[in-house]
Image (cartoon, rainbow, N blue to C red; front, side, top):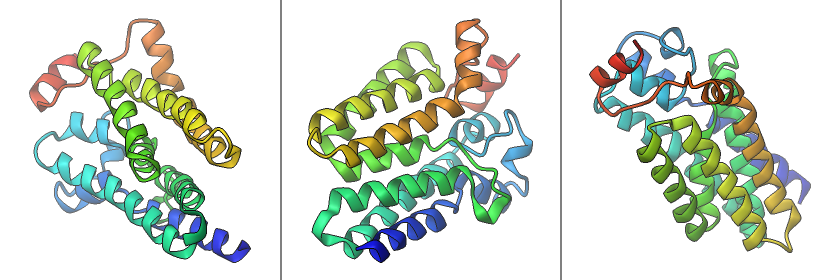
Length: 209
Protein backbone atom coordinates (compact mmCIF):
# COMPACT_ATOMS: atom_id res chain seq x y z
CA UNK A 1 0.00 0.00 0.00
CA UNK A 2 2.77 2.44 0.93
CA UNK A 3 4.69 1.92 -2.30
CA UNK A 4 1.49 2.46 -4.28
CA UNK A 5 0.89 5.78 -2.53
CA UNK A 6 4.50 6.86 -3.16
CA UNK A 7 4.13 5.84 -6.80
CA UNK A 8 0.94 7.93 -7.10
CA UNK A 9 2.78 10.93 -5.66
CA UNK A 10 5.74 10.46 -8.02
CA UNK A 11 3.52 10.04 -11.08
CA UNK A 12 1.49 13.11 -10.18
CA UNK A 13 4.48 15.33 -9.52
CA UNK A 14 6.45 14.33 -12.61
CA UNK A 15 3.47 14.62 -14.95
CA UNK A 16 2.41 17.86 -13.26
CA UNK A 17 5.75 19.41 -14.14
CA UNK A 18 4.82 19.40 -17.83
CA UNK A 19 3.63 23.01 -17.85
CA UNK A 20 1.44 23.88 -20.83
CA UNK A 21 1.99 27.64 -20.76
CA UNK A 22 5.77 27.31 -20.73
CA UNK A 23 5.84 24.62 -23.41
CA UNK A 24 3.55 26.40 -25.86
CA UNK A 25 5.16 29.81 -25.34
CA UNK A 26 8.59 28.31 -26.05
CA UNK A 27 7.59 26.08 -28.96
CA UNK A 28 5.12 28.41 -30.65
CA UNK A 29 6.18 31.95 -29.69
CA UNK A 30 9.87 31.18 -29.02
CA UNK A 31 9.54 33.06 -25.74
CA UNK A 32 9.01 32.18 -22.10
CA UNK A 33 5.59 33.21 -20.77
CA UNK A 34 7.25 33.81 -17.41
CA UNK A 35 8.99 36.81 -18.95
CA UNK A 36 5.65 38.34 -19.94
CA UNK A 37 2.93 40.14 -17.99
CA UNK A 38 2.65 38.91 -14.42
CA UNK A 39 5.51 36.46 -14.83
CA UNK A 40 3.25 33.56 -13.91
CA UNK A 41 3.34 30.36 -15.97
CA UNK A 42 -0.42 29.93 -15.94
CA UNK A 43 -3.40 30.12 -18.24
CA UNK A 44 -4.45 33.69 -17.40
CA UNK A 45 -1.03 35.22 -18.06
CA UNK A 46 -0.74 33.21 -21.27
CA UNK A 47 -4.18 34.38 -22.45
CA UNK A 48 -3.38 38.01 -21.68
CA UNK A 49 0.04 37.82 -23.30
CA UNK A 50 -0.76 35.84 -26.45
CA UNK A 51 -4.48 35.10 -26.76
CA UNK A 52 -5.63 33.03 -29.74
CA UNK A 53 -6.03 29.34 -30.28
CA UNK A 54 -2.73 28.55 -28.55
CA UNK A 55 -4.50 29.20 -25.24
CA UNK A 56 -6.65 26.14 -25.91
CA UNK A 57 -3.50 24.04 -26.18
CA UNK A 58 -2.46 25.22 -22.73
CA UNK A 59 -5.86 24.18 -21.37
CA UNK A 60 -5.62 20.76 -23.02
CA UNK A 61 -2.12 20.13 -21.70
CA UNK A 62 -2.67 21.25 -18.10
CA UNK A 63 -6.16 19.77 -17.80
CA UNK A 64 -5.19 16.62 -19.66
CA UNK A 65 -2.02 15.93 -17.70
CA UNK A 66 -3.98 16.00 -14.44
CA UNK A 67 -6.59 13.60 -15.77
CA UNK A 68 -3.81 11.31 -16.99
CA UNK A 69 -2.03 11.34 -13.63
CA UNK A 70 -5.24 10.65 -11.71
CA UNK A 71 -6.23 7.87 -14.09
CA UNK A 72 -2.83 6.17 -13.82
CA UNK A 73 -3.06 6.42 -10.04
CA UNK A 74 -6.44 4.64 -10.04
CA UNK A 75 -4.82 1.79 -11.96
CA UNK A 76 -2.16 1.54 -9.28
CA UNK A 77 -4.63 1.79 -6.42
CA UNK A 78 -7.91 0.37 -7.80
CA UNK A 79 -9.14 -0.58 -4.34
CA UNK A 80 -9.55 3.08 -3.41
CA UNK A 81 -9.94 5.21 -6.54
CA UNK A 82 -11.05 8.43 -4.77
CA UNK A 83 -7.93 8.33 -2.58
CA UNK A 84 -5.70 7.53 -5.56
CA UNK A 85 -7.25 10.42 -7.49
CA UNK A 86 -6.67 12.90 -4.70
CA UNK A 87 -3.10 11.83 -3.95
CA UNK A 88 -2.05 12.01 -7.59
CA UNK A 89 -4.12 15.15 -8.16
CA UNK A 90 -2.56 17.03 -5.26
CA UNK A 91 0.91 15.90 -6.40
CA UNK A 92 0.14 17.08 -9.94
CA UNK A 93 -0.80 20.50 -8.61
CA UNK A 94 2.52 20.70 -6.73
CA UNK A 95 4.37 19.61 -9.85
CA UNK A 96 2.59 22.29 -11.86
CA UNK A 97 3.45 25.01 -9.34
CA UNK A 98 7.04 23.81 -8.81
CA UNK A 99 7.96 22.07 -12.09
CA UNK A 100 11.25 20.19 -11.84
CA UNK A 101 11.81 20.64 -15.58
CA UNK A 102 11.48 24.44 -15.51
CA UNK A 103 13.41 25.67 -12.50
CA UNK A 104 10.54 25.08 -10.04
CA UNK A 105 8.73 28.20 -11.30
CA UNK A 106 5.27 27.34 -12.63
CA UNK A 107 1.63 28.35 -12.40
CA UNK A 108 -0.97 28.49 -9.63
CA UNK A 109 -2.67 25.13 -10.17
CA UNK A 110 -6.24 26.26 -10.85
CA UNK A 111 -6.73 24.09 -13.94
CA UNK A 112 -5.24 21.16 -12.06
CA UNK A 113 -7.81 21.65 -9.30
CA UNK A 114 -10.62 21.69 -11.84
CA UNK A 115 -9.42 18.47 -13.44
CA UNK A 116 -9.13 16.76 -10.05
CA UNK A 117 -12.71 17.80 -9.26
CA UNK A 118 -13.86 16.17 -12.50
CA UNK A 119 -11.98 12.95 -11.76
CA UNK A 120 -13.26 12.85 -8.19
CA UNK A 121 -16.94 13.44 -8.94
CA UNK A 122 -18.49 15.01 -12.04
CA UNK A 123 -21.25 16.59 -9.93
CA UNK A 124 -18.69 18.42 -7.81
CA UNK A 125 -16.94 19.56 -10.98
CA UNK A 126 -20.10 20.91 -12.59
CA UNK A 127 -21.05 22.94 -9.54
CA UNK A 128 -17.55 24.29 -8.89
CA UNK A 129 -16.92 25.19 -12.54
CA UNK A 130 -20.32 26.86 -12.70
CA UNK A 131 -19.31 29.05 -9.76
CA UNK A 132 -16.11 30.01 -11.57
CA UNK A 133 -17.87 30.76 -14.86
CA UNK A 134 -20.60 32.81 -13.18
CA UNK A 135 -18.16 34.92 -11.19
CA UNK A 136 -15.83 35.40 -14.15
CA UNK A 137 -18.52 36.59 -16.54
CA UNK A 138 -20.06 38.86 -13.91
CA UNK A 139 -16.77 40.48 -12.91
CA UNK A 140 -14.13 39.51 -15.51
CA UNK A 141 -11.81 38.69 -12.62
CA UNK A 142 -10.24 35.26 -13.18
CA UNK A 143 -8.64 35.41 -9.75
CA UNK A 144 -11.95 35.90 -7.94
CA UNK A 145 -13.61 33.15 -9.95
CA UNK A 146 -10.71 30.81 -9.22
CA UNK A 147 -10.73 31.50 -5.49
CA UNK A 148 -14.49 31.04 -5.14
CA UNK A 149 -14.35 28.01 -7.42
CA UNK A 150 -11.82 26.17 -5.27
CA UNK A 151 -13.72 27.15 -2.12
CA UNK A 152 -16.83 25.61 -3.67
CA UNK A 153 -14.77 22.52 -4.51
CA UNK A 154 -13.69 22.26 -0.86
CA UNK A 155 -17.18 22.67 0.58
CA UNK A 156 -18.63 20.12 -1.83
CA UNK A 157 -15.84 17.64 -1.09
CA UNK A 158 -16.60 17.87 2.63
CA UNK A 159 -20.29 17.28 1.91
CA UNK A 160 -19.80 14.43 -0.57
CA UNK A 161 -16.98 12.72 1.33
CA UNK A 162 -17.75 13.69 4.91
CA UNK A 163 -16.77 10.22 6.18
CA UNK A 164 -13.45 10.35 4.28
CA UNK A 165 -11.42 13.12 5.97
CA UNK A 166 -8.28 12.25 4.02
CA UNK A 167 -10.14 12.85 0.76
CA UNK A 168 -11.67 16.20 1.62
CA UNK A 169 -8.56 17.15 3.59
CA UNK A 170 -6.48 16.92 0.41
CA UNK A 171 -9.07 18.99 -1.44
CA UNK A 172 -8.94 21.66 1.25
CA UNK A 173 -5.14 21.61 1.06
CA UNK A 174 -5.24 22.10 -2.72
CA UNK A 175 -7.70 24.98 -2.30
CA UNK A 176 -5.56 26.65 0.36
CA UNK A 177 -2.52 26.45 -1.90
CA UNK A 178 -4.46 28.15 -4.71
CA UNK A 179 -5.72 30.85 -2.36
CA UNK A 180 -2.26 31.53 -0.91
CA UNK A 181 -0.81 31.81 -4.41
CA UNK A 182 -3.51 34.40 -5.18
CA UNK A 183 -2.68 36.57 -2.16
CA UNK A 184 -1.39 39.40 -4.37
CA UNK A 185 -4.59 39.18 -6.43
CA UNK A 186 -6.67 39.34 -3.26
CA UNK A 187 -4.84 42.48 -2.21
CA UNK A 188 -5.48 44.08 -5.61
CA UNK A 189 -9.14 43.06 -5.49
CA UNK A 190 -9.54 44.69 -2.08
CA UNK A 191 -7.92 47.88 -3.36
CA UNK A 192 -9.81 47.92 -6.65
CA UNK A 193 -6.65 47.43 -8.70
CA UNK A 194 -7.13 43.90 -10.03
CA UNK A 195 -6.88 43.58 -13.80
CA UNK A 196 -9.83 42.20 -15.76
CA UNK A 197 -9.39 39.45 -18.33
CA UNK A 198 -10.99 39.02 -21.75
CA UNK A 199 -10.77 36.39 -24.48
CA UNK A 200 -9.26 38.82 -26.98
CA UNK A 201 -5.65 39.95 -26.70
CA UNK A 202 -6.56 43.49 -27.80
CA UNK A 203 -9.08 43.89 -24.98
CA UNK A 204 -6.57 42.50 -22.49
CA UNK A 205 -3.99 45.02 -23.64
CA UNK A 206 -6.47 47.85 -23.20
CA UNK A 207 -7.46 46.52 -19.75
CA UNK A 208 -3.82 46.60 -18.76
CA UNK A 209 -3.47 50.29 -19.52
